[in-house]
Each structure stands twice: as C-alpha cells, then as structure tokens.
Image (cartoon, rainbow, N blue to C red; front, side):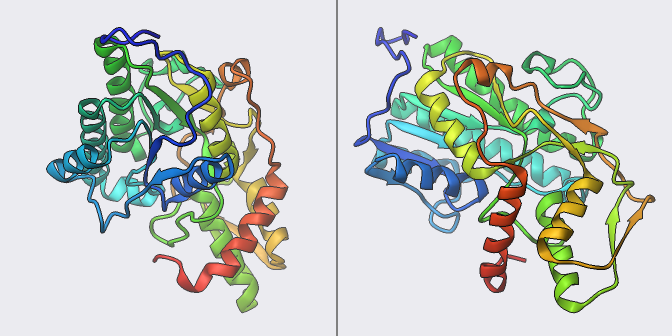
Length: 326
C-alpha cells in the first residue's frame, strides 16, 4: 500500500528494533501481545499504565506520541465488561472508548505511525447475524441491546481505521477477536465477562464446599472462546501479512454452549456440586460464532485447545487470586 506521502508500506516482517507502543499493555489482550512481542525479539517496547497516561486525556496522549515517536502501535486499551457492566453503564462504555480510540489514532496519525492494529470485539456484529458471522455482516442489522454502546464505540474505531486508509493511505488494520480469556483477565464479580466470571464462581464454590452454583440465563447460548496468547500470535501475524480495509475476525471457528463451558470449568476446578440456572436473567446474543476464513487465508489458525487454555487460566487465577482487581 502506498501512502499519501508516496512511501510504500507493503506488509512484511516488522523491524525488531523499532519503537513499538502497546496501548493497554497490562490488560488481558495487551499483556499477551507484550509477551508475544518480547518472545519474537522486539527490543524497544513502550507501555504506560492508566495512572501514568490517561488515554482519555487528549493533550497528554499527543504529548506522549510526540515524545515517543513509535513506528508501530497496537491499540488494545479499552473499557471492557460483561453484560451487567455494559447494561448498567452504557454512557461510560461509549464515551470512554470513543475518547481512547480517537485520541490514540489522531496522535498516531500526527506522529506518522506506520503500522497500527486496532482491536475491536465481535459484539460489533448484529444480534441475529447469520452464523458463522462474516466480516461483511457489519452494519447490516440491530445490535445486542445489552452492549450496544460498547459495540458502537468499537464500530467507530473500525471506521476510523478505514478513514485513515482512504485519506492518508496508511496500512492500518483492525482485528475483531471472539470471546477472549487467559492471564490478566478481569475476574471481578461485577465487571467480568462470562468465562472468567465462571472460573471465579466455580473455584470459590469448590474451595468453600458449596453444594450449588447459580448462573445467569438458560445456558443455551453458544459462544466461541480464544486464549489471549493465540490472539496475540494472530495480531503479530496480521501486522506482518495482512493489509486490507476490512476488519479481520480472529477466533477458533468452533463454539460451545454456556452450559458446556460451565461444566468444563467445574471439572477443571474440581467442583462437585450442582449447577442451577436463573432464567429470569438475560442470555444475550443466542449465538456468536465468527467466520475466520479471511484469517485462514492470511495464513493463521488457532493452536491452543479450549481444555488446555482453561487449565492454564485456572492455574494462573489460583496463583494470583489474592492480588486480583475487584
């Protein structure tokens, strides 16, 4: 791809000595990307915690980019949460994420960042999109109402990347991961997504000897889960091998019911009691399975099985349970 300044930015192996900024490097996705970049030989990684750099503060973000001058950026920073958090605080999820994305992308544009990867979410797709969900399903139907504000913010990020490509010719790209899990996830009872919430619930029940666990909904919705280390591997692969305006779905191409994932987690943590389902609580989208053919065409497929990923994640959770955020 040739930019507006006449330079050729055809994707290829990234320069290992170049300055590489990972926004959100302490979160689930960002920390996995950081680990992947370190293991892949990158020597000049830059990360700032939210206390060091508030990405919602525009002037601070621009000052940071002017000083750091990164060549590559992965935008993994976001305000995230499960159904309860999204439905309770839609203004926060909309406003905070739009500000984070716009500030980082505008500052990156001014600083001449050559390659940027924006990370979105599969919730950008319509609630009743045909399964598996193709990238061209974007903006073809109504969103799931329990997280529509977050989805709109992420859609805005995709369009921002596409606009930069059209106006400036820079090879920025977007990746849309399926449900992610792994080390550094949010296991908070009120702010977590379904899989870490289930890990915490069943582990606590197993430790306390509880005879019953209650989960939200019917357990029938189907979800696809991808380990964060697989996601990180896919991100580096896309940065070095993909250049196109469309977002790229990143997943495994297979799904399970919430009931099945709950049963597997119960087995992994050693929970022996009963599981009940509170059907008065919302299920969310009935199925969300991504079509990952575009990713496969780019030369990447997932490597970590769900069983292996859950065992690794439970082990990490138990090792860090005393220091997790609430």
